[in-house]
Length: 160
Image 1 (cartoon, helix red, strand yellow):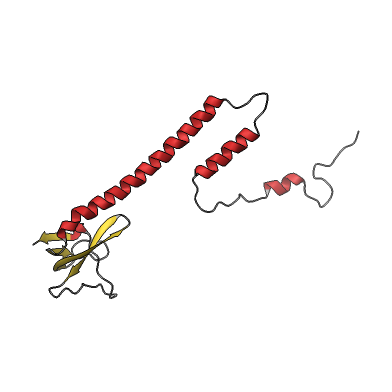
Image 2: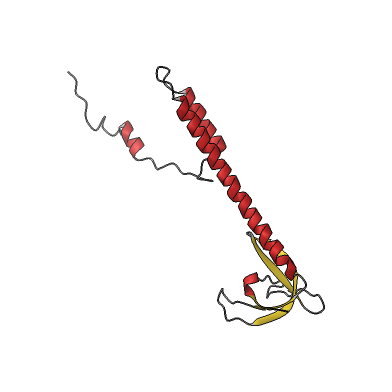
């Protein structure tokens, strides 16, 4: 009968030590699985299944149906977001050229000064409509950096 030291040979680490001391793998990019990831996982699962106990085909069909339903729900949500953005712009388009008074805000707080002008063009940023103001000569009002000042429809105090 032979005995082996628990610590292995003097000065050497056991293979388990190298596994225990490893850091967790770093993930980068998107943390959600996409269609490609799902299909890769499914084909790997089918390729490595036990031939004596194959995967239940009703289970695989149910998984495909679930993934398809999830993908369609995501597409519907994206379409609705685009529709909402377009609707906001269309609804606000009637204000172009009309005189408005807006409240400027400082640091996201109300109580700023009032500025009047005509609604210029509408710009959509992150799905939200913003507009520029023009003075009586058609010059676009600018912010302190010289860029066109953008106002939210919620900043309108009076129209006309």
